[in-house]
Image 1 (cartoon, helix red, strand yellow):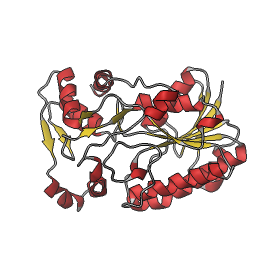
Image 2 (cartoon, rainbow, N blue to C red):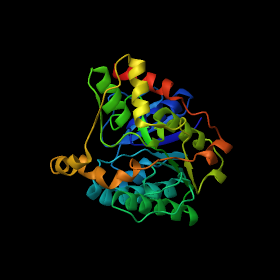
Image 3 (cartoon, one colour):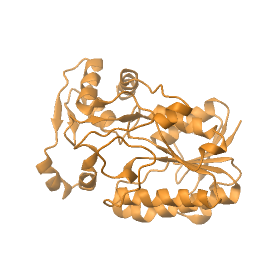
Length: 308
């Protein structure tokens, strides 16, 4: 039995908490407001990760801290909130002796033309990618200095049940179930890797149990065999039993919509994820731990059942 703090209770935080609780670990859910439901074996601790004293207190008395934080998709907010939150959680782990696991994305690599590997250099591109590179250096330097044992679990674009930020889940599956066409913000015909949220949680739990030599580095979550977004939408439509109708947001319209919608505006610098193949090499994780990621038909069936 382990004593674990999960910081942030979004899609990955919820799934990770459930996996840990089901196997008998004691889990402390940490965020500013209490969740609607606290699973058996879990407690809630109110804290703001950007508040130093509160974050350090939230990390006390546990052996592992898992950061599953998500902030609104706003570059200006990220620039302020992410470095402060990471620094506070690292300080909390340093104080308590807890190991630190950061549930991260792939932005820190920036635009690439080859499959992403964990040893790629950190980017200076854009606002959000450069910021993710900055906070990567925070936990890496803290680990290298011996202040904390830290690692990152890096995942591609999420999908699955109850994933409100997912293009596949919310803008494809949920709309197809209503008889509406999938609404896609980018051209959907480039090969693209997607991460099923329960697989992300499984990878995190695997690394909770890993020995210390797994720390001080990043690990990519295994994904199902690569498909294009259009192929994934077509499979979802087939499983639902509806025509695979798709509406694609024209690139010329994005700047106009960006005047009125911050999230559309913020997506502009991330176009490199969709204008070329976006492939994730997870062989390092697979060779040491597991590589049997959930197939798309199983993951989509679970998402369909939730949104139905």
